[in-house]
Length: 145
Image 1 (cartoon, rainbow, N blue to C red):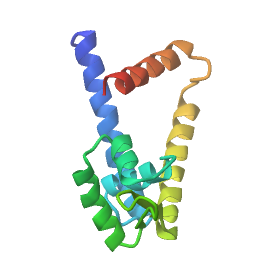
Image 2 (cartoon, one colour):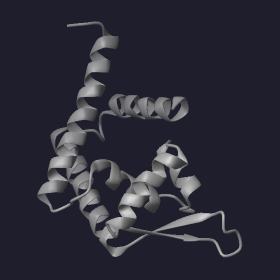
Image 3 (cartoon, helix red, strand yellow):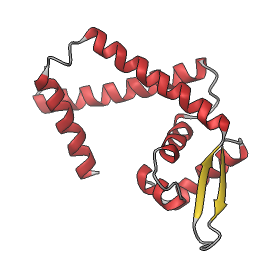
């Protein structure tokens, strides 16, 4: 066994990669024909209070150019529409279509099932040290990145 630092690094990378892989497989089996990146762009649009290009790019921590590439694909696939502010034509807003809401419902169901499964196998409500550690890891990533 390696040092605690090596073990934690390996565990974090392993968990992250497994979640993405499993999430991708489950969504494909449930009929979602989008990449995980596209699904996460839809999720960012939904979870952004004022879903304009700048705010969504900031939420995803990507450039406007990168987001534009993803949005072009999602518009072409009929998951998103974009429109301009009538008062300030420079502002471009994003709106999810029904097809996007259907994908996000499937995505949310996957996450609910995953969390329910974790709670079933672990008694996280009683394990305050684990919960505090996970919160600290989350806070670290939010502050640093």
